[in-house]
Image (tube, rainbow, N blue to C red; front, top):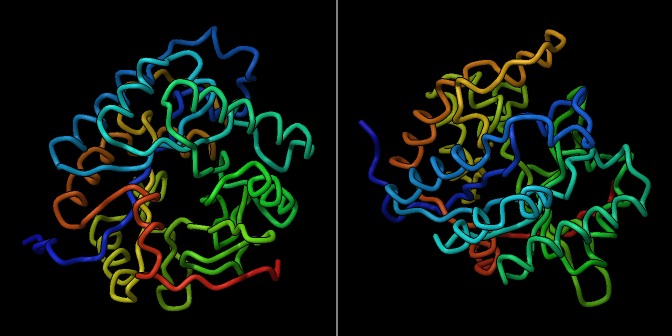
Length: 292
């Protein structure tokens, strides 16, 4: 039986708004328009699920999507969700120069704010690619007026991660009177092994009991978990392209379970947008962490 979610800690529900081919490395940005777009139907499916559950979330919108699908962005906004940015062209941060990153970020923010008429407060890097190699990106986020980041994965994978980074929200950069809060993806230590429990491929891979156990453990520490998903993960019939084995697993494994798992979490846990949670920052302990 699912627990009553009243009087529980509010967790962050987030969506990275991108199309099925935008995160496939072998499909360059210049070719995106050649592929079928399925982002609208899948994002509207997510909006419907959230509406039925009565929750609001944070949508990290790719600037390219904002440019091509402005009505979708307006509808996300009209449903009461926070709109943050996922960059413009889904380029890995550490493959960009500092100037390229700044230009991509400013273009994404400009497109998104112009449509939503909301101030963009948060950023999430494609594939969590703010790493030690690209830690300079945090200074640029702060300089461009962002208030929080959700890009540093506190464990190491072949693509990303800073394994010694804190597991819970913390102040990652400070500049004069301004500060940038890092809200990392949820990772739980099970018997000495770090397990990413609350999003994307990991949510499709792991059993539901482990995901719920991980979020409960985070909440018992009086911290908020952060759940993340993507519109293509609600599309079991998305087009199939030839990929190396590991990439094929990453993009296509268990696509038929995400909708069910998200709906279950919405019944059991409380969720909200990141900006509202950080405005209630007295409920969380943010510590300065400039050691990386």
